[in-house]
Image (cartoon, rainbow, N blue to C red; front, side, top):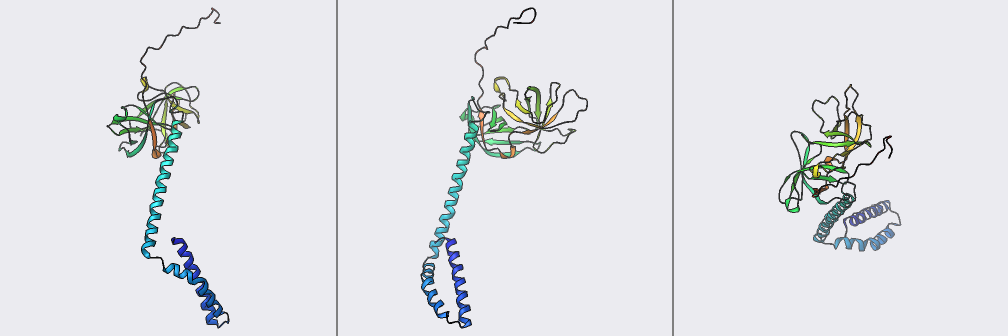
Length: 281
């Protein structure tokens, strides 16, 4: 019998017993009727409760605990499959060759930043300086590889600098961890955007990777984050800003390692457009 059912039956028994005692002590004529009705109704219930061995109840409770654990594990696997489907359908992976992976360990550096360990390695074709992404954007890059696992430096780690394009115009800049001597305070987990070309970023600008030769260590066009604040103008040629990462470093789970696709043939030359002396075509 389920523990919940037992508790409810006990409450009913206690309530009816109390009512019977009150009627009996008061000398009501209905006491005998209550006694007879109580025996008729509650007798089978009492026998049912008394007839369940304690060992059987313990076994049922143990089985319930096991089934709840199994259900929780199955739900966790379904959640992982949902995140994998989301990852495979995201703009970060569309049209790219990738190796799905799962984070199995994480570590905070004494110098700042985070690294994670994923459950794929050299036996899966993983190489150092490969781009690692989640469904929402850039996670970081592979910095060490063993046969079955790899270590990933998460975006914003000490010494990590990523070349980026900012906003619709694609203005060049770099993203890094906030510097210790930075004049502007930045929220925990945010990044510092430094401009390369004279420009002023705008709050809401999407920041994407510029890309590297042969997509190592960063493939082009991966979302890095969004500009959330622009530093005051102090007469400098370029403006710095605060960027909120697209991927929460504290909640990285299912990721993908992008397999670099090196160009094996020369890029074909294209003829320049002819122009007239007046600048027309």
